[in-house]
Image (cartoon, rainbow, N blue to C red; front, side, top):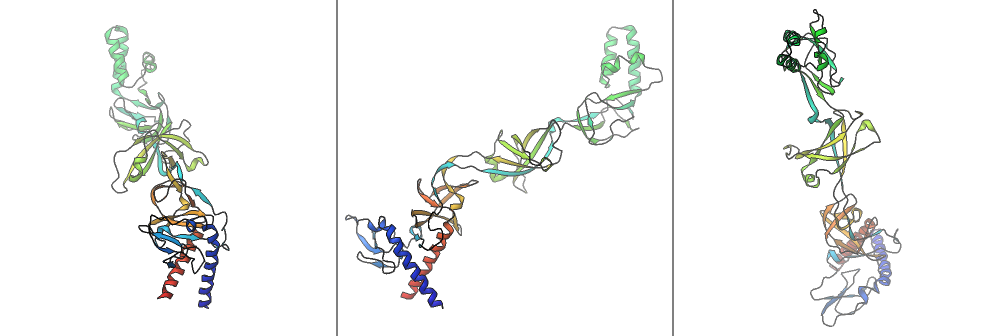
Length: 403
């Protein structure tokens, strides 16, 4: 049974060789021998083990033997291997082909990160004067606060004494009045509060504490009834109308990113939406463990739909140079060696090792092995590669039989 299969394979290859001869007639087989160069021997392009010291036909497929000159390469070299698709093979006609040409090497970089506050808009509300905090209007994280909004009332003997001095200075006028007013302002009172001091009731011992900032409370340090000293931290406030998106970019990709580069940001909470922003900062420090750097993108968030600590994804379109390139699907890998199949005729292809450079989304940069204008096989290269392996198996079998 195995002998029958072997004979069938040889017969199949012989039919293919006869078919290829029709296309080869205008190619290598019809070239005249250069009289100035000496032909070492003649060889079959489809069956390299068939050689002769004079012109003739291949004893397997009937193709004309091709002269091999001094200093030239013969068809035993893998880079010159010719593969023919037999006429009975599927997709033998209209094999997808692409031209080797210069084109933009478009590449997009996908990164992951997190939404965070704009640290340049992070502020602290401190106690303007020592005293006891009563009547807290803000007592938990996440509450919005605006400038001059009451956040608490304070009982302060220092503030009561300064208010009394202001009343006395109103009658005297002059420099003392200005000094008393500036002192009250240093204790956190605004002009609307200061001008009402003369009308205050004698038993009114409390003053309102107003927020000097607008934003969202992200940390609270005070409880109702707590005694605080002047300058002691009460709240931390963040302004989320502008946020940062911090991405992690690995070391090898950092040179491809620059400030002002556009990033398309998306978050799970805004399904189907994306925001275009620009890179604002690239950290000069690498994380020793992950070998990555932090990249910052600034996002406007007036309606506060982007939430703090939300997961985010970003797509960065990197600068694309115009280089000689082929589609990625045209490249096959034999171990670590990339190769392509170059079209000679619609059924004849040459296996070619190539040297590749940068990789894009759809293209490989070609540094060697191909020339501009050549045509390479795309999705049909697996079929051709299978035929090449079959031809190689047949050559090995023929060599073994001669031994």
